[in-house]
Length: 75
Picture: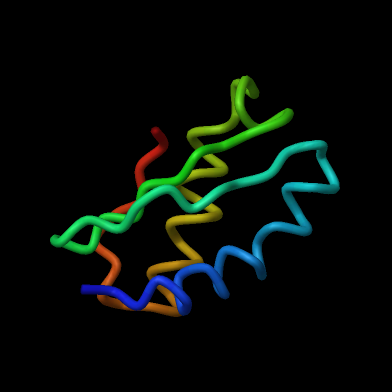
């Protein structure tokens, strides 16, 4: 199973970019099969581009820094 602290550290690197646009991301859960579940909040919660932010930004960065990450899903 993934180290929650390490995942949170990577999310913290991404957070300032989201906050500049009025949004944020919260780590909700890491499943046994290494799927990271996050909640997009603020402007990110209802932005039409949120799926691109989730996959192209958050998931790509997490997979780059922690190759064991299988996927990132919004909850």
